[in-house]
Amino acid sequence: MKTQAQAVVRFSALQRAEHFAVMLIFIVLAVTGFPQKFFDYRWAQVTIGWLGGVDTARWFHRAAGIAFGALLAAHVARLVFGVAVHRTSLSMVPAKRDFRDAIQTLRYYFGTTDRPARFDRFDYRQKFEYWGLLLGSVIVVGTGLVLLYPILTARFLPGEVIPAAYLAHSQEGLMAFLVVIVWHIYNAHLSPDVFPFDTSIFTGRISVERMQHEHPLELQRLQPVGPERESKIA
Amino acid sequence: MVLPVLASLLLLTPPQGSPPDVLPQSVHANVACDDCHAAEGAKVQCQRCHLANYEKTLDSVHQRAVARGDRVAPGCVGCHGTHDVKKAAQPRAAIAQGCAKCHEGVAAVYAASVHGTGVAANNADTPVCTDCHRAHDVAGPRKTQWALRTPELCGSCHANTALMKKYGLSAKVLSTYLSDFHGKTAALRGTQGTEPNGAVVARCTDCHGVHGIQKATAATSPVIQANLLQTCRQCHPEATPNFPAAWLSHYEPSIKKAPVVYAVKIGYAIVIPFMIGGLGLQILLHLWRLMANR
Image 1 (tube, each protein chain N blue to C red):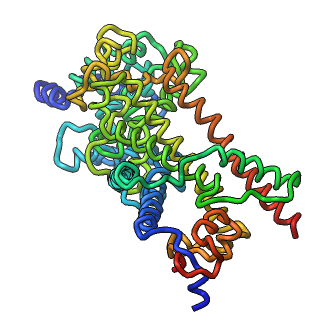
Image 2 (tube, chains in turn yellow, purple):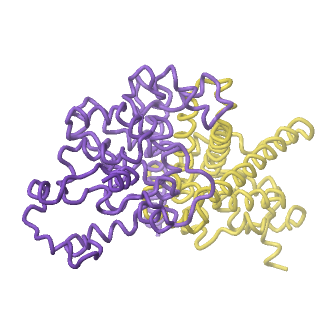
């Protein structure tokens, strides 16, 4: 069928499941976390009441945090295993070309060049968001563990680490939330390129038309002869 | 003669002079006898004039004790006296002495505290019993709602900048407490609308003490550096010597007081606006380019 022939598999079932899990856990963490950070606002107090009290909210926050930590550990383990055993290439690793692409994109936006940057599997913005999420996750999971086990932490580290972790956990969470609200919601929903909804991370598929527009270099690798070739097309 | 003296000893009120002797010196000097004594043997109805305060007493822990059949718990005259009724706070130390008639043990502890010695020295700023426990609607201090209100209660004086400046004390003790884990927990448990499960965590009094509260710099204060670990161990029995430093002692983070926390604070104050501003700018540039291309 024509519509099927024009779509390419972009994300594996595992990658889609990972995104879905991160999305759900992120929502739980935000709903149970921000009312604690902004405890003196009425909306925060109402939310905590709605959740059944601060102790219940914290129980859910900690459960979701542990799940998030497990997801992070599984993700990193999968990458390390993939590289070590299967010699998979890491398409997310930033390269020199990403900095060139970023500069060219800015030049294109400002109108000093007519040619937009041509991207491979992941463009520099996607890499930035991925590494932002990964490093941010390491920070929130690490500081979250310090807050979950303050007595154990103080056995090995100075006590001041605990309030520092408290502040970093709270601020890193705020930054992650703002990046998702501003940047991710724009790129996945509001950008005229994908409006109203970029479904590829849920269906695993992306249209060849969008591939030509957003990831032309990857499309060339997938379809060395021509866009109608069937081999790699799902 | 023996019987009335014995009765007044039992009620812990001092024997009083005969009405014509003491009434002229009382605040009721100009009140006629039958304003209180409507009829022979009738109960004195203080609420005829003092309705608002009388109604408050109906919610008090004393009234609940009376309702349980407690014969010692005071009504109006138990605290104010009868024919020798005076203005309550003259001097303020008289209030503590009045409560001490029944609450002997705690009154002695209070008298030795920084608040108690202040009151004894006629300091008008330091609190007497009723400033915290209230006068007519005396609350039960074992109620959860009372425990949750503790920071607010202490803060009514200790967050007052002008008042604290007078004594060289920080007025940021409440805000720094509330921005930390214990304070947030107490605040959220107070506003969540449901009864919290478990004990209310570290309030002001759990670390500083209650009636026997001392200056935070006193050698026997539970919050002085040397005693802090012991204080933390009341709730965290496994705490090690590093642990008390997790609490910034009501200081706001600064280079001198908590350099690591301060670095985190400044770091995020720079990174967050830079990050969100940069991403927002790129979104605007993208939209601008799309519009220009059309």
